[in-house]
Length: 240
Image 1 (cartoon, rainbow, N blue to C red):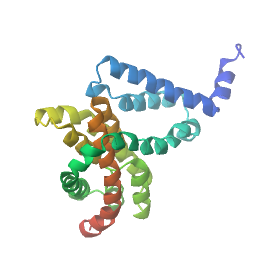
Image 2 (cartoon, rainbow, N blue to C red; image 1 turned 45 degrees about the horizontal axis):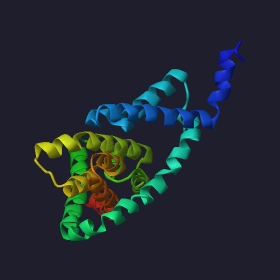
Image 3 (cartoon, rainbow, N blue to C red; image 1 turned 135 degrees about the horizontal axis):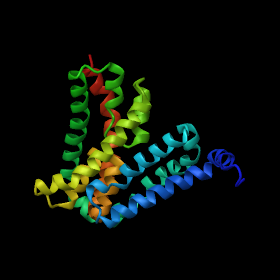
């Protein structure tokens, strides 16, 4: 084996365990860097894990299908992780109930704005109808967004890319934006990022404050429900 390292690499590259290890190791390093920078917005571990793994796959000539054979184990954990958001929700239930009415108003306003704004902008830019439909559900978590995309006969892969980019951008700008706007209520901060930036934004909210994370998780879940009902109606009315 040592005499032919290429053969060893070919053997290892076909093992799902290798790509699972690469994924976890890269994220652990990116998260450590983020922690060392006191969770600076630009040190988002998801953002840097994506490009590092992307470059690694490009340099090694590894297909995404081969990589996902191992990474799918992490993908499977997205479901339990989402369900686990119920724990901080329960712990902060009194705070949530006290802000129920403002939350519902913000939910409707945020969901409508997220869908209509991207559809109108894509239409103004002259993008093909299939692209417009793929971008419409960008502000909800990937599993729901791809399901909506499929129901509209759009491109779920493009939808997934839009969802990830939306989440990363939201996680990066939420803290400086809220600070600039002098919004100090962590309930409002968390709920806003949960609507706009789904799971990635929610992870960022938990890094900042537990209450913000709880409200972000609520917003992410409710926004998925509202958007799944709103998108088909919105694209019917807005798309030529």
